[in-house]
Length: 110
Image 1: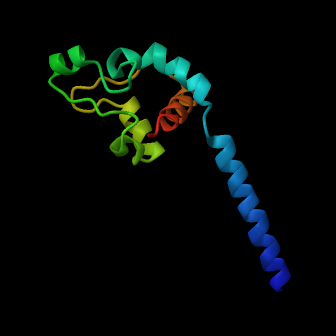
Image 2: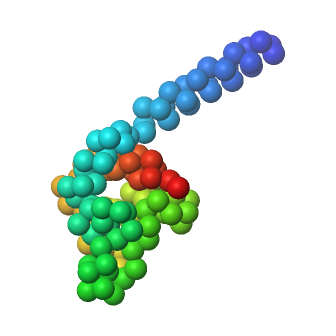
């Protein structure tokens, strides 16, 4: 009985690891999408475009900073796709591309 439990745990762990690996986006592709769809507002340095921040009277968070990096992927997706405050929703970015962008943002971690 113990052997079967151990085998089940091993298989379940392997399956979970494979699922996580396949669910993660491609950071290199994400960088391209970021440059086309996100950089205008979030800046090449990932700290936000000061002119846009000033005109909207908002403060951009450093995408490489602790606050953004502590957020879960689902939170980042929700913020990216939906309108929040003065932020308009991102258009023309597929769910797969958004996974890639999140992977890219994760690669910025300080």
